[in-house]
Amino acid sequence: MRGGTFLDVARKIPYLAELGVTALQLLPIQEFQTRFSLGYNGTDYFSPEMDFAVKDADLAAYLMEVNKLLDGRALQRYQLEDLRGEMNQLKALVDLCHAHGLAVIFDVVYNHAGGDSVTNACIFLTASQRKAAIRTHSISPRRGMLAV
Image (cartoon, rainbow, N blue to C red; front, side):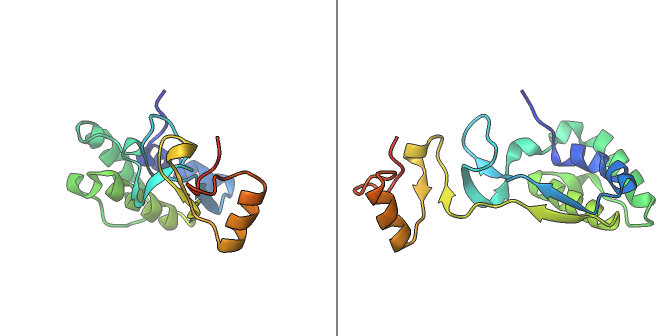
């Protein structure tokens, strides 16, 4: 199953603004290794998930719609190359939200990262959190990872 893309969300901005929405919170959008994720197993905090981008072959239709949104706010139009890649599409989404008066909130989780399972993930704990987790057997003292 394929979810929406950044530009699919952008299509909804006028509707959301019309409803009186003032902020859009994106669930974690970091790159992840598995086929499906809720975003809490990111492997690269500074790269948006590639699957959330429209493929280059499909960009022309989205470009027309995004430019209509920009025209409605008397803002400079995008060129096709401005929307290539997930990073540029995320930037366009944020720009369009701001142009319509919506704040954008990113849901980020910095205390763990990566892998397709808990045993491959890195869990970052303070010393006192680590001691408490070892006492309660929720992490392995040798590996510093959650016990499965």
